Length: 227
Image 1 (spheres, rainbow, N blue to C red):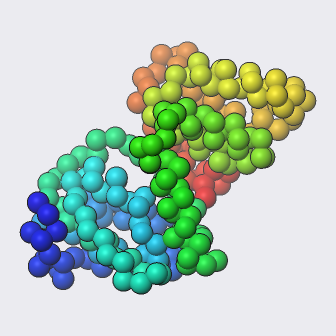
Image 2 (image 1 turned 90 degrees about the vertical axis):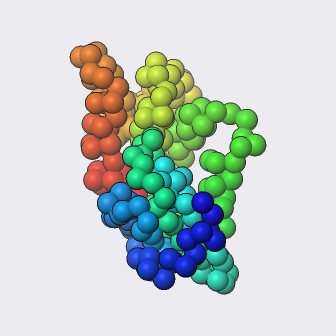
């Protein structure tokens, strides 16, 4: 189907204006999207193009059409054509980007497009999982353990073998020094998440079970990880 096939139904869509919402509104919106029937839809109003929503909504069976009303207003229409279950879990969407329009709406638009080019552009040479590991180490170097933890969780959920984390932490100890590793990295949520993975694997837990445990303990409910 195309937008022209369901354009006349847009007036019946649930309108959700998220321009002034602070914090992560996505879980609530996703819950509504999962429950919506085929033939239903949403109109999302945002101050920047809501690119982070596209893949998730597509995986749930939604088509989309986005119009730019002004430099600081976008309207994205999502129409459900089939009742699909999410093909893959997309953990920890970049909710922090919603803070940028509070500073300046134009900066918010620039930030989300910068994120999209960095993480979704097909021209990127390195695999997504490897870029997550690089982002993890860069975050540690900058003292951003919150971000580093999120990257580790995402990397594992996307299929990285825990043996790769062994290499990463060995290199962190080498480059940062054993003293820094012991006092800063060891007690961090980043290393706690790593230890959870290793301990659960030793006990024979299935990967899916470990992923759910990671999302529960080191997801948005954790004040040391959430954005």
